[in-house]
Image (cartoon, rainbow, N blue to C red; front, side, top):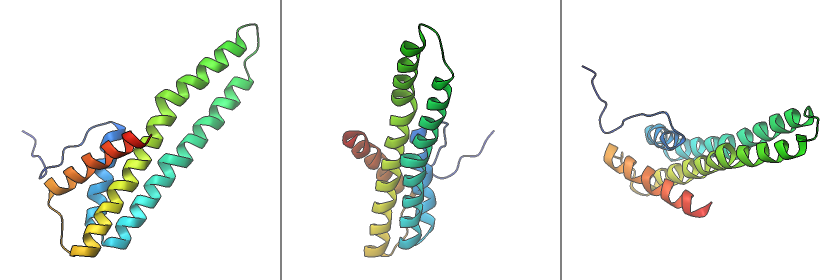
Length: 132
């Protein structure tokens, strides 16, 4: 039987990256939490989408034939909706969760309980979803 950690269950989705980043940020002080949020935001909001767009453009340039334009447009739409938009949502969620944790640690100086971190992560995901 597998032993669970206190209040934190991992999964394999982009939403779990917000949770994991929040738990990582909670281990640091306020500055470390801000840096964790900034790095997560930069990676998921900018670097991954740029890499995906570059890869899509390189592969759509190789297409030729009568259906190449339609297929390239379809590929761009699928990449945007299935990969780029969720990556940007994740980056915004990471930034918000880490910012709240940094503000909490700066103002109150105490450690957060796992339930508080889960609530922060949930609220950050909700706000990020509403923003995008």
